[in-house]
Image (cartoon, rainbow, N blue to C red):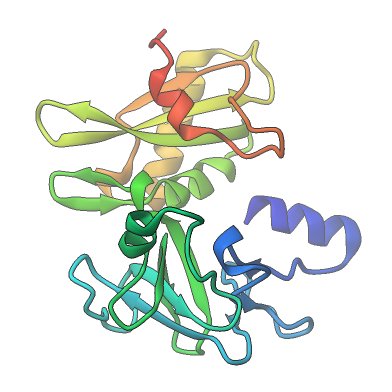
Length: 221
């Protein structure tokens, strides 16, 4: 949201989000220009069926998060020479399981919550890193951030935030307290980062995607 706001202030135009994967090229859903719902990826394109399912393959109720599964002409036939991986990725009725968690809105659009494998489970409650990152990114001291799950003896997992500050020379303890206060205003208690670590930069792929898996291997400072 913070990036989208800066874009609109700078250009006078809204970002039109869409959604697709390599296995569903080019897209599953789009926001039509002039009808954008910021924070959603829009509605499925023509001839494309989307459903949100739980771990047992049953559809979840409207407003609940589920794994986005899709069937349509843009969906791959399978992974080349990998029949078992193909079988694992498909439902019995031919829907491809994307690995992304999403929520359907009342208007028929879809909001991508996070990657299923990145979900953090704190005392039985699901925490989606993207939600925590969105809140963190709106703090004026934060340049960029990433959230991962870490092992916790009490809650099973806990939320850890890696943060790059705009001004690395500012007082870290005071900044940390200000960030935690900011989180308490907008997040349920179990979603608030238990650990905050300030680092000079985040590990990224060649296309600028933050590599959460690499963060989990970094030694704690």
